[in-house]
Image (tube, rainbow, N blue to C red):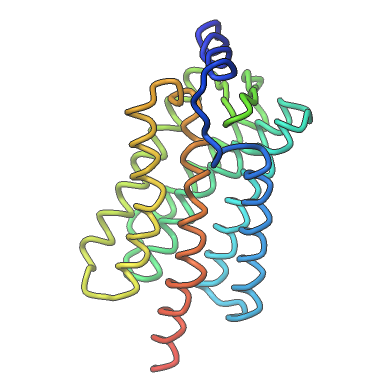
Length: 232
């Protein structure tokens, strides 16, 4: 915890500016992602594909709103838990979408089970959850065991989804879903490895880049899915 406080002090004083992760941008991202969810609902209605994509867009936006509220002076424990729950749903939902497109149900139920276990830990166990706004991004502070479980869950189910996409590369919609994954994974990892002070804020950094994922889902993936089903 002391090291995290030192990192935050450094971030407030140094000249590096991560403008794409400011509270104002977090709120704007929340609005955009909510609008994208509304657009998908209006344009394509409800079906097994849009249900999942709308939920992905909703939880992406909810995480951004939680970050904004942390920076706006809201209850940091409450909003840290809300943001953690939101981002915990994303790998399971992503794997669900991939399973619908590839018609492979590998580990989808396991993904949701793991997500709900983590959410249960957030809601019902007396674990320390807190956060701090650096003005550039939000540092989330978790219990060590929860942090390990959270990152393990993310890594495993993101990799499973990517592997399933690569195994079914012949479909054009698969390319865009793969691109949606890489749109936040690659820049998130680059920032993580090359800017050391961001390592305590990885969920914030990765979900900041996920605006690109949201745009790809709404304007590339959904049209491809719709086109395919119209042909049928």
